[in-house]
Image 1 (cartoon, rainbow, N blue to C red):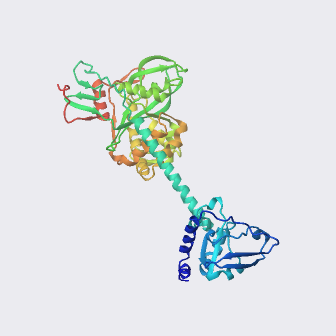
Image 2 (image 1 turned 45 degrees about the vertical axis):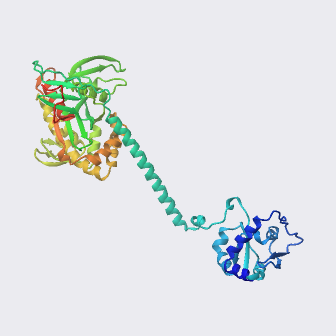
Image 3 (image 1 turned 90 degrees about the horizontal axis):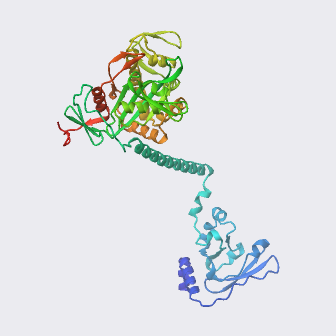
Length: 494
C-alpha cells in the first residue's frame, strides 16, 4: 500500500518501473484484439494495484470500437491523475493530437482505480518519439502573426543574399580595377632638346625626375569619362567625336580625387579602323578623332582610351565611360538640375531668357548642354575656355552627387541605369559596385577635388592643334598617377 501511495504521488516513476520490468521479461503474451460482436464492447483492464476492472460498455461509433484493444498496463504511454488528465485533455491538446491519441471513455474514467487515467497513443510515422507540444506552436499562432513571421524571415533572407552578392561583386570589381599585371611605361629619358630629365626603374613603376623619385600609386582607380558630340570631318561628313576627355582618379586609401582634363585638340597617336573593324594605320591626329575612327568591334571609347594611354607613354588606362549629350541632359535633370555661377552670357534654349555672366543659375535640360558645349570657333583657344566651363559644371555636379551617394549608395547605380542606353562603357556591374562603395566610404567633400589640365601651346593647322612637350606630359603624369618617395631608390640617384 505504501508503494501504491508513492505511485499516486509520482505516476511517472510508476511508468518507468513498469517499463523496466517489461524489458526484463523474456516472453510476453501477444496482445489480442477484443472480439467484437456488436457496436458495444465490454472491456477490462488492470489498475495500478493489480486488480482487474471491468469497464463499462462503450456505445460509441463502430470506428472507435474497431480501434479498441485490451492492452497490459505497461504498454500505455501516459499514466496521469484525473485532474492532470482533464487539463491535458484540453481543446488545444485534442486538436493537436486528432486521430493519433486514444483515451478511455467517460465510463472508463469513472471506474479507473485510484484516480488514474491510462492513455494509449497510436504510433504514427510522425510521432515515433515521445510527443512534444512546442514544435506545433507555430500552427496555432494567429494568421497575422504567421504572416509577419514569414515576411520578416523572407526580408532577412533577401538582405543576407543581397549583402553576400554585394560583397562578391565588390571584390571582383576591386581586383579588376587594380590590375597592374604587365605594367610597362616607357618614358623618354630626355626632353625635345636632348636634355636628360628622367630615369626609370622596374618598368616605369619608379621614376626619378629632377632628383625626386616617384612611385606608381596602385591604390588608384582610374576611369576615363568621354563626352561624345557630333562633328564635321574635312569632307563635310558628320561623325561622332570625343569632345570632352576627363580622367577621374580616386585614391581608395585616402579618398583623394583628381580629375585630369585633356583637350580634344591634343595631338596623339590615333589608330584608324575601317567600318568592319579592320586596322588601317596609326596617325598623329587630334585625340578627338579617336572616337570617330573606331570601327567594328573596336568601340570609340576603347580607341580614345588607347590614344590617351599612349599619350602617357603606355600608362594602363582601361576603364572608360562614354556618353552623348542626351545622357548629359538626363544626368542633369535626374539630380534636379545643377546650380553654379555662370561664367558666360547665353540665351536659355528652354524659355529664351538671358542668363548673364556672374549670375547664379540652376541649369535644366538643354541649358546644361549649351553651357558645356558651346564655344566661339573663331578663337584658336576656344576649347580651353569651354573646358574651364566644363570643370565648373563638373565641380557643381559633384557637389550634389557626393553627399547624395553617401546617404544612399544606390544613387550611383540609379544614375547609371538612367543613362546606359546612351552610353558606351567598359564598366560592368562588379566595377560599378566597387566604384559606388568606394565613393560612399572614401570620398571627401567635392571641394577637395583637384582639377588638373594637360597644357601645351596651340597652333593653327587645318584645325587647332595642341602639342604637349615630353616634360609637361611627365610632370602631369607624375602628379596625378604617382606619389613622391621620401628617398630616392639606390641606382636612380643622379
